[in-house]
Image (cartoon, rainbow, N blue to C red; front, side, top):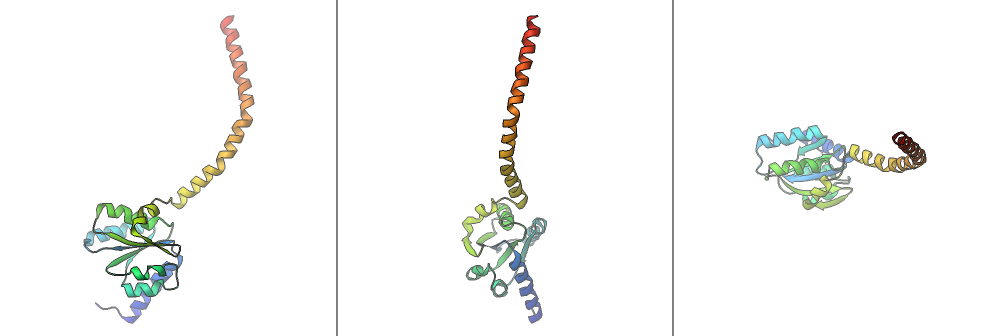
Length: 176
């Protein structure tokens, strides 16, 4: 079924809106994937907050024009599925990385983040980025460590005095 001009405009507008607010994009060739595998991939994408779409390459070029994902345009060749990370930069990469372990038919072609195009070999690095919650907890741990050390240092003279008095008490009780 051919797309009408209005439906093409809607698709371009939808993808452009997502691309304008996305953190990163990953394109992958889906040739050889079964329908049920693609359905599973779409379900996992919804769960993780990843926008996943199969769009004609010419429409995708128009949608990403004047966004930081315009660098993907030369790589848009063949049957591709696009994944845009909306919540954190690594979510689309994690999705394809995990899904690719089970389905060798899915081949990542390119990655775009921050206006730069990366090779598919960088998928593991992007997938290993912490999520927003993980990054915040790591930051809080780093911020909290000096305060904890300071409090322990302040409390140590009192604790040492208590231990010394307790040792003297124990020594007198055992002697007497």
